[in-house]
Structure formats: C-alpha cells, structure tokens
Image (cartoon, rainbow, N blue to C red; front, side, top):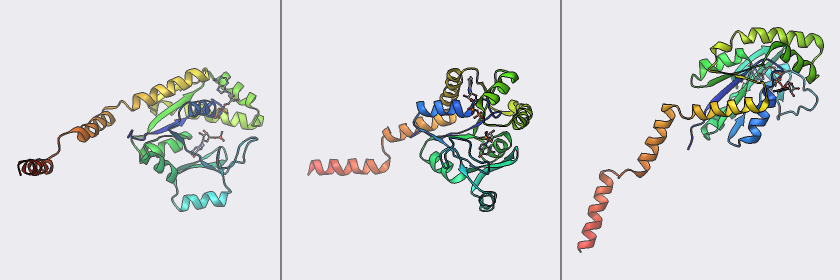
Length: 222
Ligand code: ADP
Ligand code: 5GP
C-alpha cells in the first residue's frame, strides 16, 4: 500500500486555493481534503461540514481545550483549526491528505509533523490578487484591504515552504501540484520501503519453510 503523505497548502486569501484544490480533487480520488473548523460565518453557497465545520466561539474553545485540533490560528478576526482525528485516519489508510491553512498553522504542523510537504500558492502579481478578491465579491472593501495587507505578510514566509506554485491559470497550477505530489512519492525513504516490502513478499521463507520442505520430502519417501 502507498504511504499516505501530508500536504500543507497556504497562500493569500483570494489567490485561488479553493478553486485549484476543487479541480485537483475532481481529478484524483485518493486525496482526503481536511475540512477545518472555523468561527467565520458561512459565505453564500458554503455548506456546513462540507466547506467548513462552522462553530461558535465556545465550540471552538472546547475543541482547543480537548486537544482535538492538530493546529489552530486566528486569521483576520476569526479562528480556524484542523481536526486531527480525520487527518490521522486518512493517512493510516494510505491517502494523500491536503490541509488548506494559513502560515501560522502551517508552522505548527511542520513542528509536529516534520515530514509534511509545504506548498505556497502565490498570485502572478499583487494587482491580480486584488482583482480576484474584488471579483469574488464575498468581502467588503475594508476586509479586502485587510486581506491584501495580510497577503504581503504571508508572502514573507513563502521562502520557508518546500515549493511555490504560481496560480496564473488553474490548469497550470493544478499540473504543478500534481507533479509535486508524484515527485514526493519518489523520495528514497518511501521508495526503498516499498521495494523492501515487495521483496519480503516474494523472498524465500526462512527456517520454518525449510522444515516444511523436509516434512514434505519425508512424506514423499514413505
Ligand atoms: P482562495 O480559496 O485562495 O481564497 P478562491 O479559490 O476563492 O481563493 O479564488 C478567488 C477568486 O479568484 C475566485 O473568484 C476565483 O474564481 C478566481 N480565480 C481563482 N484562480 C484563478 C485563476 N487562475 N485565474 C483567474 N481567476 C482565478
Ligand atoms: P477563508 O476565510 O478565506 O476561507 O480562509 C482564510 C484563511 O484561513 C485562508 O488562508 C485559509 O488557508 C486559512 N484556513 C482555513 N482553514 C484553516 C485551518 O484549519 N487552520 C488554519 N491555521 N488556517 C486555516
């Protein structure tokens, strides 16, 4: 069985993370996308437990207290966090797991799970990011300016990531994400373990099987 890998995706609000992840998930079945808990109110079209688990502040505090979250952070006035249970279950099933989380959360995951692969999604330019935020039409002008300010701050962290994908076109960005995921499964640690496991299944068995062989020969001569 393939080893499950944890992929952490970060990038400024409005850069197109949801758009490219939706396309990636439509193309690949064995990916588990982690649904986060948040105190942010749903946007039009967002469904509870599909896009987010929409929680009250009290519910979110309880999740923190019970250590149910792999990581959590505050982002422009709301709390966001990753429920650990489902991530671990999917990894154990050999699935690739994707977290779409901001940079503070990504740092917490890197500290707890050093083998996680971190990918930063960047806009082709800052004016294009502003255009996408405005055209999405989900945030007031003041909130858009807050998110743009935050985007500059977040970009400062991009160099700490393993990869940067530029979302110029959705097709191109998804191709790059797929390439990274394939390449990460070619790392020596995973490949050697895979070959050893396959070898173990085919290899001649040990002393036990020699004893079985002797017993077979003894039966044949009687
Ligand atoms: P995020 O999840 O990063 O906040 P969204 O996926 O909601 O961003 O995308 C923000 C807006 O940008 C949406 O209106 C989306 O349709 C648009 N968008 C996403 N990717 C592209 C792209 N490559 N080119 C043009 N527009 C895009
Ligand atoms: P939005 O409100 O636009 O859906 O998300 C705002 C930011 O919160 C995005 O940068 C997104 O990646 C981040 N985010 C979503 N879920 C989580 C989470 O579980 N943890 C953290 N740390 N950030 C999250």
